[in-house]
View (cartoon, one colour):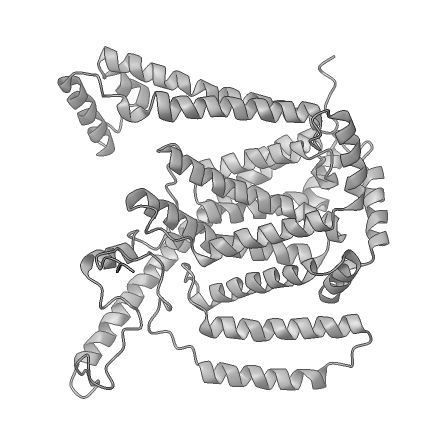
Length: 529
């Protein structure tokens, strides 16, 4: 077997402990945990049923599992406010994935029984169906625009607040206004697409447009932007303080009698726990691919349209987010989970916190593939876990396909001659949008790539354009608008740039069929005649 070359660049991932001065107190924490486990049975009454006993066992196993994760699992890419917190988040996500696997091994009755042992407020399946029927029957006249309905949706219903907090969290995850706006728009398209089968997706037109899209969503993104800036400023000050403390510690260690630094082959040598000291300068740069930990950046520069690979990577990011959001409602309908159940809050909090390191890892993966290459890039554990949990939840949905979905799906299959379980008008709109997007993608990156804008122009004209662009980047032309800057380009280049801009018309036109999905909004005025 041929040996691997010794000059390979190492993969970019954090060391086992990002803070080599962290004091885990493993023996003390283990002793406290085992003492707590031995005292818990004396403070709890004997379980009244097998289901309650199983629930106590599962929660005890969860606590022991979290102790192991806190002490022995590698740090995530996020370390603020404490790296141990993010290890616990990762452990909760891993345990949730294991719990879903256990339910997948059972039939529906036993799986829901196991689920109810952990979530006692779940109720029976018949109770859920009754609530669902009452919810369906109460939709009449609910879309009438009035002060009463507006106050009910904003003040008395949790949806406006949940949307605002949800998009505040997504801004903390994506850290880019463009990505958040695109994700919000396509989530509305997702709701309109599956309105015919998911009851919770049926919304009033004014609620979806004004309260959600232009109300709570924008408010949440604005709040998330300010939270990111606050965390970035706070963490930066903490990093400066930690660096000064580390410098003082190094000075103390260098003083005589304070340490015993020996040769590398001697017993008692200070070990390189960080894994950085033996690396050369190139490898150290690779292990810190970004100048700042991406988890601390107040804004990510996704550069969506910079390359076809970059566009696909960002589309995957948004697609996984939509997948996880849709699974929220699929899980509710599959397992009969009430809207006000504590499980919904736990799941949203879990995915919210887990998505922060997952998005940072994906951003690092995208930047690494762009700068170095895919051979070096490595998808982080939080990103991998998020995707696996979403897949497992979707497998649970398909195995225990909700009975109240079956009737709708069968009716749609009869009406749609293609056999695809989707209404024909919705299917045609999506096929048309995908076709237009495919045409734009081919023209934008294959036929007329922006990199060839200066390919066939004179050397002097190319130098003029490059100089103007560089001066704009250096803020020497800060007062000029983009259009006035373009007017300074030679005529031939302006004409080519206009042709390149016309290609983007296909991207805008591709959104028109998706916007026509608004016909599925509830309470839409009959303006079409």
